[in-house]
Amino acid sequence: METNTMSKIICYCKNITILEIEQAILKGAKTLDDIQAITSACTGNKCKELNPSGRCCSEDIKVILNDTGSKAISHCCCSK
Ligand code: FES
Image 1 (cartoon, rainbow, N blue to C red):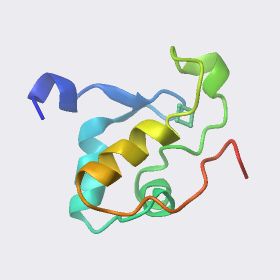
Image 2 (cartoon, protein in one colour):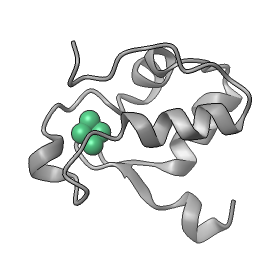
Image 3 (cartoon, protein in one colour):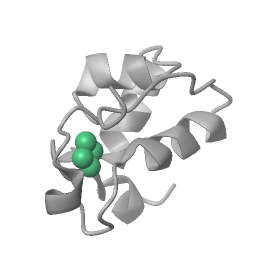
């Protein structure tokens, strides 16, 4: 991924970048639960108000997890 893309915010509730997600995966994160524990991304539950897309970042994070070959078997903050 390009540097500009990596510095892009992915979780607007917690101000977490794509780079921070990638770094969490490098530290061993394999699921959305792992990403939540390491970065606090996907724990904000104010997505409709804060995320310009109007939805939770969970699906975007799962795409990154799947891109790296990890399994994204977890629940986002909005479904708990
Ligand atoms: S955008 Fe990530 S928890 Fe709301």
